[in-house]
Every structure is written in structure tokens, then in C-alpha cells.
Image 1 (spheres, rainbow, N blue to C red):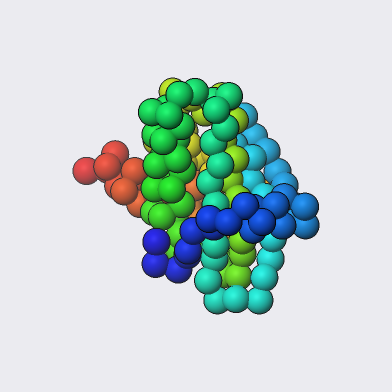
Image 2: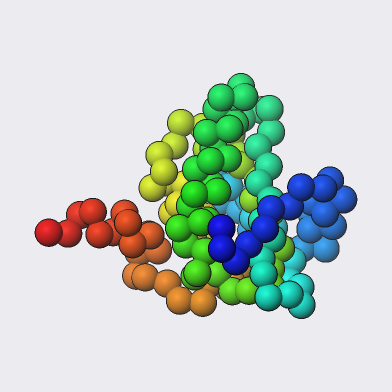
Length: 128
């Protein structure tokens, strides 16, 4: 991730939960807190309710990769916490990416977006 760093500390997550604004969809909940920085911070949380460690780690990787591919579309100066819901278990990359971009649109934190909200890699693979 070029413009972002990871949230690691418990107190940073708690600050975003308490002071940030949240929106949710079927697979994810996104909390956003605006700051006066030129970089974004992103934290990903997947509860044990979602599945075993293999499932949780896969969901974390899908969310992180979805964010990384679309990182340039997000505005700067944000602290974002993404919480996976139980419905995220067994979902494909494109479904997770679509859910992440949907929440970005709800929060109005996207600078520019394509008409379908998918990354150029996904979109470009269908075209000949």
C-alpha cells in the first residue's frame, strides 16, 4: 500500500469506533474518521464468529488486496476500520471488492470512481 499504513494498536481501533462514522452492508462494516494527514490508515478486523483462522486470514487478505488495488480512489487523511461480518465467509474477491467500494461510496470518501466500482484488473480481464 503506497499511501496507507496499517492500524495495529487496540486504542487506535477504539478511537475510530467511538469517534468515527459507520456504514454497513451485507459483508462489511466500515468506520471512517477524518484526520489532518496526507496518508490513510487502515485496520481490518475479523471476529472468531466468522470462522476459523484460515477463513479469517483469507477474508483479511481479500479486504487488504481490494483496498490496495483501489487505494488511489480513496481520499487522503482518513483512518478506516473495516470489520468483516459472518456473511463474508466464502465470498469471492470481486464480491468483497464490490462491498468495500460500496461502503466507500456511502461514506463519500472516493475521489474518482469507475462506473462499476471494480478495479482495472478485474474490469480489463473481460475486454478483448
